[in-house]
Amino acid sequence: MVEIRKPITVQEAVSKVMAHMPLMPAETVSIDDCDRRVLAEDIYADHDVPPFNRSPYDGFAIIAEDTNDASRENPVTLKVIEEIGAGDVAGQAVGHGQAIRIMTGAALPEGADAIVMLEVVHEKNNGKEIEIKRRIKTFDNISWKGEDTEKGTLLLEKGRQVTPGVKAVLATFGYAKVKVYQQPVIGIIATGSELLDVSEPLVPGKIRNSNAHMMISQVKEAGGIPEYFGQLKDDFDHSFRAVKAALAEVDILITTGGVSVGDFDYLPDIYKKLGAEVLFNKVGMRPGSVTTVAYLPDSGQLLFGLSGNPSSCFVGFELFAGPLIKGCQGLKNRFLSLAEATLTHDFPKPNPFHRFVRSRAAFTNGQWQSSPVGLDKSNVVTSLAEANALMVLPGGTRGYKSGDQVNVLLLNSEGREHFCL
Ligand SMILES: Nc1nc2c(c(=O)[nH]1)N[C@H]1C(S)=C(S)[C@@H](COP(=O)(O)OP(=O)(O)OC[C@H]3O[C@@H](n4cnc5c(N)ncnc54)[C@H](O)[C@@H]3O)O[C@H]1N2
Ligand code: MOO
Ligand SMILES: [Mg+2]
Image 1 (cartoon, helix red, strand yellow):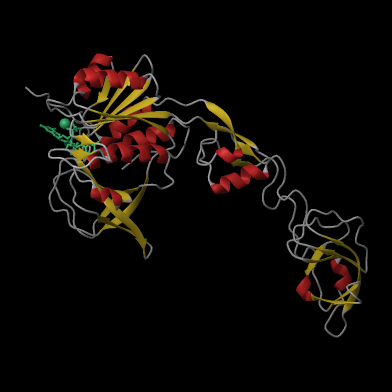
Image 2: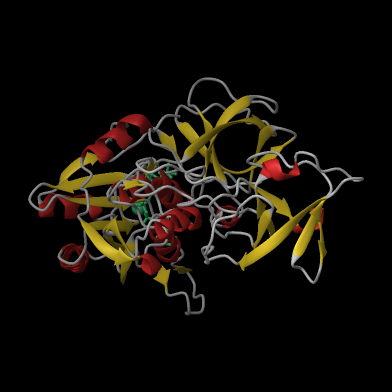
């Protein structure tokens, strides 16, 4: 008799996986090598930005009061006593009747309390004097010390991913080296006697192994380091040895195929022989219902047994393995973001399981719209190239109609801290 598996909900399955999440240790890397890594330290401003009052324009630093009586008919003349560019500091203070020619980014000279732009003044006497024909207000055009951020401000919390903008902040505060979490090494094994290598020609009964390449990419997107151990024939002893050997070299192991109830689905027996605790082997979802996750108590390693069906494998990864890989690097926003969208197609047939329909979500006229892409079957591969979202159609007794409001999980989005559907 074949084993009848008891499904758990997606929410329960996510909780079980995350409850077994290891946290990678921190390491210090060069700022040049920290792209997309996760900060393992809070970043505070240890000085004001900008660190001094400065000019936001190319112009002249003056004392505003000197222009109190200036008008078109009665221009005020100031003597230019020095010129400074960005990086220079004036050698003298500005006094009444004087101006210092100053370029954008240069420190405001002592005595000056306003900047007039070059375009506003009339230069005369070979640039030794300037004429101003209007009143300039005190503090006009000054970029104040600390106006961007003040010393002591918490700028980036640990658990943030390094983006180009985050890098700008790190560089501003002198982080030539940055403390980030280590990236987990994720072993990948494809199983199936039907699998051909990507470079092999098709022969009867065989297909090319697409899942391994897809998962290597998914692991990279999630910030893990993929280590591919190749594709295995459906042979128990050979597969057991390969899984055991891979486990010795990785933090987490992901397999694809061989997790269902078929005669050559050996993963369940491999988990048994390894002494792994199976957290679940059936989830109330489509595709990916056979997704299995097991835990090795001695080493603390997780084994993800993803389905062989390409779309099931993809969805199983995105819902369970992806967040785990992100989470163990300390990433706070480890789960896919959720948006509410208007469904553009009918799904009349009810399904007892939650469906995760590969979809294209687009934000148009202030609203998300979600359209399914390709055939909604778990063995389909081509729709994966078009999908930028997984539309969530909760299981139940009714179908869905075009115009219904549904939730969509956005692939490759910034992510969020908590999982809910
Ligand atoms: N009697 C039952 N049969 C099946 C059940 C069930 O509950 N009872 N579940 C079905 C569901 S749902 C799924 S999903 C699949 C899961 O199968 P496995 O995870 O055991 O995967 P395989 O049997 O090895 O392969 C399934 C399918 O995927 C193709 N495949 C496998 N690996 C790859 C790869 N690397 N790249 C591309 N395609 C791959 C394989 O050729 C098969 O067509 O089980 C159902 N059966
Ligand atoms: O696990 Mo299967 O993907 O539900 O089709
Ligand atoms: Mg199978």
